[in-house]
Image (tube, rainbow, N blue to C red; front, side, top):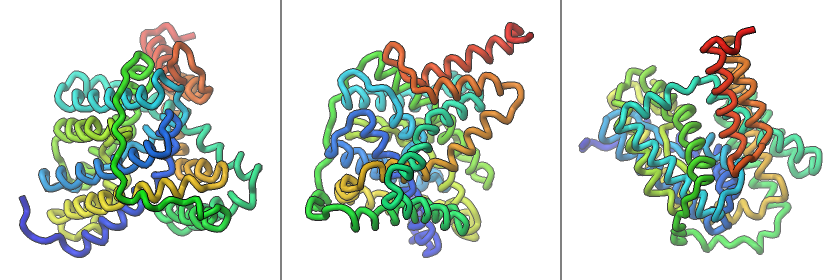
Length: 390
């Protein structure tokens, strides 16, 4: 274990990483866990557990590997939850799905065949599923602007203008604009900031087919395809080569530990991994792991404020937080849609995956993400075997 103190540059980088990682996506996380039945108290607990889990995971894995292992909660996974069909037993059923996804991630890290199977899902189809999940969420700002332009307008305008200057500042700026809107329009006497040091809520999971297949399996697939595997690729692009298996198993283990407290999935980060791994983190590559360590420390600190943040967000005017989540995910949607439809070989299957997923259809308790990936997979399989040729 290292004994030296972290260089100041890595401390400042870690602070920026934590601010960007937390405030650019916590509205999405809240939308996701509330979408599968979390109460306000359970939402605050889930936000706290997710922040602390990814903070501790980032600290431990970075110190262990001496690589900048940036860890996050699964933002695409949270977006998936926001549009998922309700499961039996409500949020207790959803927690069973979270545990399933975490267990599958651990298994993928320890058992190569499952890792290869997850990697074998055509990337364009995984991106098409994610784009289909994100589409209704990305429509929310447009719908909200039409219904309440005075309330929603400042948030969208801030996001747009700051995005011309820096994409990293756009979403945190939109969150700040939304916070100012809440402060101006809401009844602040209803705010209960005394929840700062609240105890997390433990939720006993209730397993069912819809929880395992409808939430757990899609959450595992979308997190592996859009977070864990790209996270490894980003680190490798900067010359860091920790073994993927132990990292997958570790973040899966943290997912299992935090799931009963309402956190959906802990995973490797991609965007913030680049921030921790590049030369702006520190000129000396051997020191850059400190940036991920310090980001983890700041994530844990922010987790202590989860009760205050959640209760304040609860004062938001109707559709404001949905609009923030929508603008935050617009870039991810654009990237996923482009990646899904670019390869000619899988374009038809990806289009079908996207359409079925975006429809939100629910059959046998399973949501559009499951049916979209299944439909696209069948079409692509038929094409590869010659049955899909004219």
